[in-house]
View (spheres, rainbow, N blue to C red):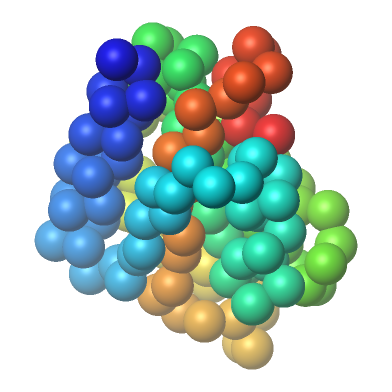
Length: 122
């Protein structure tokens, strides 16, 4: 099942990033649509998240969303997942760029089993 493949990929990446010193959480709930989950975490101060949808998984991509102000629309970029170390280095640079008041090692995972069909995670 596609959701299980996405969830497993997120768990593997989460473990790899934790090994690289990043504190990360996985939201693998299916209670809400992706946009609702994104808003929930942004309003709680999570300023960086990784979204993985069906297209992302097929193409070995990660969508990285950053929010500078809670409640403000996140800026999204897409990167190719190569190694956990390279992804972690990229995320650490993003976290540093968010400013001194940003949590230095906190990021959020969402396994977006996107129902919309475009796989962009929202």
